[in-house]
Length: 482
Image (cartoon, rainbow, N blue to C red; front, side, top):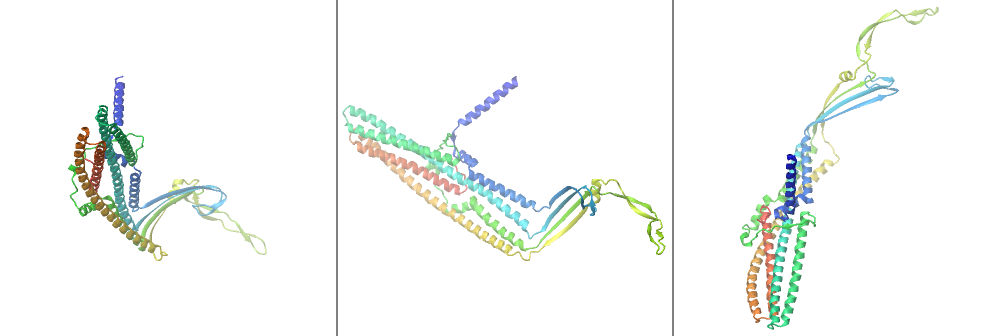
């Protein structure tokens, strides 16, 4: 029974491990992106397109090999019919069968087979870049929503801190009002301020909940599943700014971004498509061969000959006397057939082979070959336009991202100075308020200004982080907050 106990302990440990894993709900950005890759329908569709390209490439390579097909038949005939072996009419029932095999191979077709393989190889490479592009798109979307969750979390902390500060100030004010040091209006004003801060906390909670839902939807995760993201230590001071210029970033992105690679492969594929259309104007040469045999249930095998004596026969009468005239007896050689002719023996004896070579020269195709060539040339021009448009979009996106990152950095630095100044102003106002030198209205204005500036600082911080990560992504680096 020891082995049963070991199995029980092993299963218990496995279930505990699975349970602990299920309770671990802190997700890093990389884990969120990997989860989205596994569940995103666009990514899965791109992977299926890649699989189709792999099948097409394999099919075009196998087209170089000879084809092979075989067949057979078995039939029973009744009444007057033709014996397939003797080719003579017979009036009896019999069974017949036949088997055949044929093969053909293309020797030359204007390079169409080779060009098809080349084009399918380019299409497969392009489909791999398309899969990477789909993953990049979902990765950027997940990263954006992930940062929105972190932003919402910090804004909630800021709102809660503001509420706690107002509540603490309200408690001190109540004591001063009870002691007669401050009028009752100060307490009422602070109670209104606390209520306002409570609304801000509720709004921040709603924003965080909405940001978390958007992240789950981007990950294709059900809304009722728990999700807690892990907030890394991200400092703007340690990040710095991208040292490359927009043009330098663009030149690097041209070599690493998958949509650029896919578009360039599309142009090359369309060029091969033009060559493929031109091959229809050239002659084609093919070689084919076949093997066939059959059998008939009425067939008999010739096994020899024998001499047969033909007796005298009446061949006529003598005119005038009507005397009978007889032929002389004779010896004749006649064939001798077996009583049975085996199926496999007939297959062996009736075996036939053929080999043929075929040359096809296109002379007049009713304009179809010319039309296909023109379509291929148009497809090439479209691919070139698509490639140019993709490059232009990439350049514009990089220029916009660079300007946005620079603006976000400047805004963040300005807001940082503003927060520092408002903190000093609020500290001095709070001290004066506690001794009665500042009225409640001035205190609330100073508090609200500081709260608003801190909220702007948090928003500007994550705006700059996001814009910087986008530029880093264009440089070919993975999306990460480390």
